[in-house]
Amino acid sequence: MEALDQTLIERYLANEMTTTEKSHFEKRLALESELQQELEEYKLVMEAIKLAERQELLQRFRDRDKILDRKSRNYSIRPNRRYWVLSAAAIVMMVIAWRFFIQPAHHADQAQDFPKDSTLIQQNLPVQQDTPQEDKINNEKKEEVKKVTTKPNGKELYADNFEPYTDDSLNPTSRSDEDDMSALEKFQLSYWNRNYKEALAAFQKLIPAQQENDNLRFLKANAMMALGQLEEAAILLDGVSKNPKSMYKTEALYYLALCEVRNEHFDSAKKNLTTYLGDPGSLQKAKAKTILTKLE
Amino acid sequence: MRSVVLIKPPGYLLRLSSMEKAESVSESIIRSLSEGNMKVLDQLYDSYRDDFLRWAGQRFHVKNRDDLLDAWHDTMIMFYEQVRDKKLTQLTCEVKTYLFTIGYRRLIKWHKRNEKIDLVEDVNANNDIDESINVLEQEEINEQKEKLLMTAILELPNKTRQILIKRFMGKMSIPEIMAEMEYGSENAVSVTLSRGLKQLKKLIMERMASQKEWKR
Image 1 (tube, rainbow over the protein chains, first blue to last red):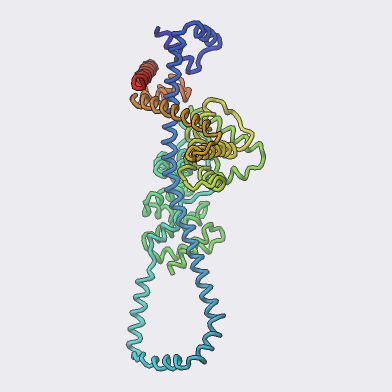
Image 2: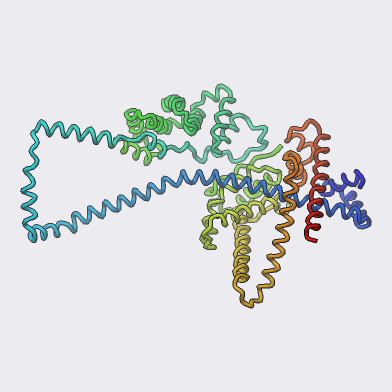
C-alpha cells in the first residue's frame, strides 16, 4: 500500500477530512477492495486503541476508589463514635432509671425479706480503720492514679477533631485556562481539592503582599496542619487570631488550640478554647466543647 | 488550552431546582469533558460514586460492593465516551440523573444476564436457554477478540500508546500532542504515530493469523 493511502486512512479515521476529500475517499473505497481491506484492518487497530483507553480509565477510577475509600474510612470513625456515645448514654439512662424507679421498691422489699443482709453490711463497716493521716495519703494516691489514668491523649483528641477548614465561599466555581491560572488561583484550587502539598507550593509563589494576608495565612496553616507541620502552623494561627481584621480570627483560635492539644499543651489549649467558645461567631462550638470537656 | 470547570459538591447540585441552572452546569461539564479535561471526570466520579453505590445497592439488593463499583465504572466510561464522541452534547436533566440512568440500565442488563446464567445451570427445557447460550458464545468471542487486541496494544511502548490514544480517542491534533507530550517537532509526533499504527496493525494481524492456525 502506498504511503499516501496510509496517510489518507489515518486522516479518515481521525475524522479530519473535508467533505470533498471524504466523499472522494469513500468512492475509492467502494471500488478498491485492497483499500477496503486495509481500512477494515485499521478499524481493528482503532478498536484496540479504544480498549487501551478504557483500560486506562478503569485504572484511573480504581485509583480514585482507593482515595475515596481511604477518606470515607477516616470520616466513618466519627459517626461510629457518635453511635457508641449514644449507646453508652442510653445504657446509662437505663441504669439510672432502673436504679431510681425500679430498684427502691425492690430494695425495700429486700431489706424486709432479708434482714440478715443489712446486718452483714453493718458488720463489715468497721473494717475501714484508716487513720485520718492514712486517709489523706490514700486519697492523694487515688487522685494521682486518677490523674494518670484520665490524662487526655492529645494525639487522639487531635485526630478526632482536626479537619482542614473549608466552607462554600472557598469553592472556586469555574476557572478558564488552567495553565494561565495565577498563583493565588492555583493555591485556592489546590486547597479546595485537598492537595495540600500543591497548595503550599503555590503559596510560596504568591506575591509578598498576599503571603502577608492573614486570611490566606489561615488557609496555609490548615494545609500545614494537614501535612503534620504543626509548630509552624501554630505560629501562623497565633498571628491570625490576634489580627482583628482577619475574617478567620475566631476560627484560628480553634485550630491553634488543636495544635496545642496535639503537642499536649493542655493549659493554653483550654484557655484558647474557652475564649473561642465565648465568641458568638465561632463555627465549631460542639467540637470545641467536647475537647474542653475531655481536657477538664 | 484546556479549561477547567469545577463541579460544586452534590449538595449544591441537588439544591438546584431551576432547569436553567441544571442545564448550565451540565453544559459546562460536557464542554470541559469534550475538550479533554479529565479533572471534570474525576470530580464527577467522586461527587456521585457513594450516592450511586447506596442507591443502586438498595434498588437492586446487590450485596457485593464490587459489582456495584463495576457498574459505576462502566457508567462513567460510557458517559465519557458519549461526550468524547460528541454523541452527547447537551442534557435536559442534571448530570447526576443522567449518570444514574445509565447505571440503572447497566445493572438491569447485568441482572438479566445473571438470571439467564441461572437458567443455563438449571437444565429445564426453557425457551430462553438457546438464546442465553448464543449470548454467552457471542460474549466469549468478544472477550477473545478484546483480549487479543489488548495484548497487542500493550506490546507497544507506553509513549506510542499514549500518542495513539490522544490522537484517535482524544481527537487531539499533532501540534497539541507535541505540546502536551513535549516533543521537539511535529514531524517527530507524526513519525511515531505512523510507525505505531503500522506496528499495532502488524501485531494484531499476526496474532489473528496464529489464532486461526491454532483453531485449525
